[in-house]
Image (cartoon, rainbow, N blue to C red; front, top):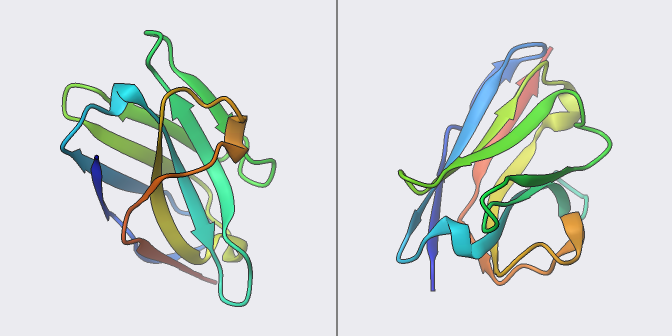
Length: 126
């Protein structure tokens, strides 16, 4: 079972860029459908991005609200998942969670999650 540890959150001004990292321990990220979810106060947790690299090619999915601003990628040598967040807005304020599901992303961004990280807070101010 993989263990996930996020980092990189913080309080940032709208319009800047931020990169979140998720270090994985105990197993290779290549074996998992990896991803990022977020939960804002009073809202349900939502899928932001998913990625699967088990085929040798990175297959990615992004939710509509971040497409064109965010990118998901991973370093399979370092075993780290990233979320590059560009041009952040107030609506991006949330707790961001790294997530894993063993195997490919059969359900795209909605592939069920079996392992969660502890989360890293992103707060965007104007």
